[in-house]
Image (cartoon, rainbow, N blue to C red; front, side, top):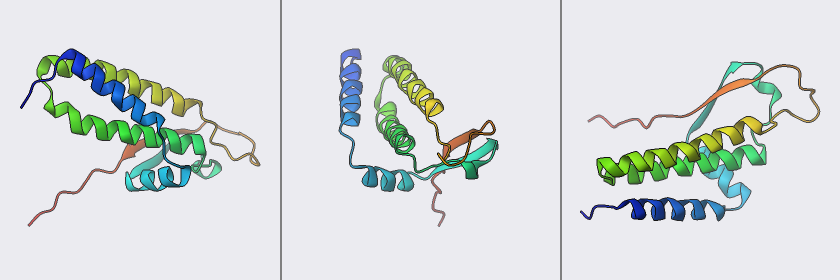
Length: 131
């Protein structure tokens, strides 16, 4: 297997970021997010008062899902040195999406914003088949 250089890694990440710019239509993104098995669990506040079909929310979750797929595909192919660089860049991209999620107003327009809402978003773990 060919070893990747730092430049290769930066090109790989750049190509990935460009691929995120070519988002599919919203309905397709929504379906893909459902297949990605994201779970939203309230930590504080009323989850029924929010619109989880918010377009910006779905787009950001879709991007996070694609980032996770990219990480799962590429990380284990890297040398230890390149893993460090990859992780630094990955962490920066991940933090940006977390900030984006924090800025989205998910409250329904007809319901006044009454309380703080804190949620945990995670992906359901894939179950391994046992024979």
